Amino acid sequence: MKKTVWTFGLISGAVLCVLMTINTVFAERIGFDRAVVVGYTTMVLAFLLVFFGIRSYRENVGGGQISFGRALGVGLLIMAITCVCYVIVWEVIYFFFMPDFVDKYMAHATESLRASGKPPEQIQSEINEMNRMMTLYKNNIFVNIAFTLLEPLPVGLVMTLISALILRRREPKESLGTGLPDLQN
Image 1 (cartoon, rainbow, N blue to C red):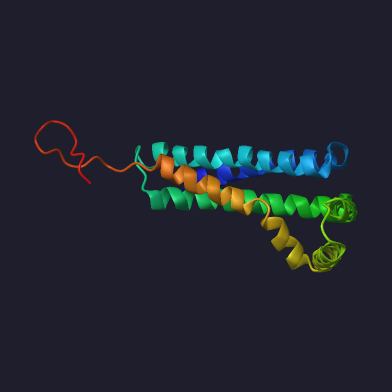
Image 2 (spheres, rainbow, N blue to C red):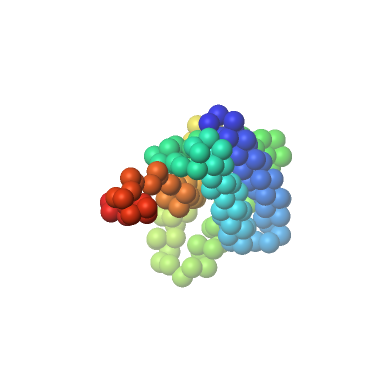
């Protein structure tokens, strides 16, 4: 299992990191709103490798069979490796190459909020909350890592659950003497 998990996890992580880096570089040019859509789309594409990793494990290690629990376990490990790669690369990009990224994003979010037509009190309240969260993000590495991990994690979990459901395959039941597998239960 280790070889399958590491292989597909690192490939998925590499795909996600390359696409995330490209997206981050062009985020201002294409607009932050479009960059978010592109970013989550690239996550779905990268997490497709969870499906292929589980399938590879089923075919090469499981002899064509895998339980939902084992498929989920393999998928979660691949997803975890992918997410760790994502966090590491983002931390390098953020701290060494784009330390002003959050400030630029905050300016965009504030402008969008002001243009939303919400009451001024609600706008100010939301801006204050965003500023509080961004202060934590900038000044606490653990908060920064946690926020960064929360970006790909939900997408990875959904892709892993779907993949495990699709790919699970158990042994056929004993035949009842008809020459066909028993389809009950």
